[in-house]
Amino acid sequence: MVNQDAYRRELEYLIQYAHDDWLGLSVISGSVGSLLGRGASFQEQLTLLLGIVGDLYDAGARAGDLTESTREPFLPWRMEKADVLARMAAEVQRHSRLPDSGDVCWFTVP
Image (cartoon, rainbow, N blue to C red; front, side, top):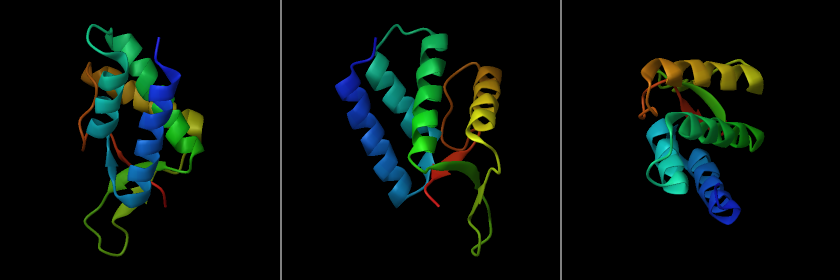
């Protein structure tokens, strides 16, 4: 069970990060590890990761891809929250581990 106060603090940090910069999945994966501690199963980690992503989405952050363009350096995924979560789950399960930055997507508040 995740401590709700610790979760709230981590989520606030991640939301601020997404406002300030591109938020990579390694940072979110680090929050998952910090909140769950050692010995958590991959399924527990994935469930928490998806919960955080959903909460980031609710806070205005959007998943997308970084581009080479200086005009549009971030290309948001044009998807609803449920579709983003389904895509994330499929991608993470395909890797069989929590993702690093550059894997799957990035987040920012547009």
